[in-house]
Figure (cartoon, rainbow, N blue to C red):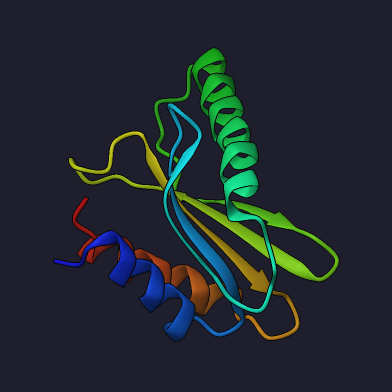
Length: 124
């Protein structure tokens, strides 16, 4: 099992193009851990803003009567990808992993695969 800091370091070192990562509590909007690379992102602002995205999607799914779970939410920008992955394990309820990637260097399929592996090993 991996702790939060180790998991975020893994994301930054094993996922090509990673420029920032965070573990976020979407009930409070607070980042429980962050690690910034060369991206210069304010990950606390990103945590709070992406909390609104997760809440809105969950609210919409509820209104639609969808009983599915969210695997991830992808936001594509001109130069970046932002990947949001709600945790599904029993200790991860109410949390999501956030990963920002340099679009020119990242492989989205591999990033999703690696983030899934990191989530599986994460102990909160």
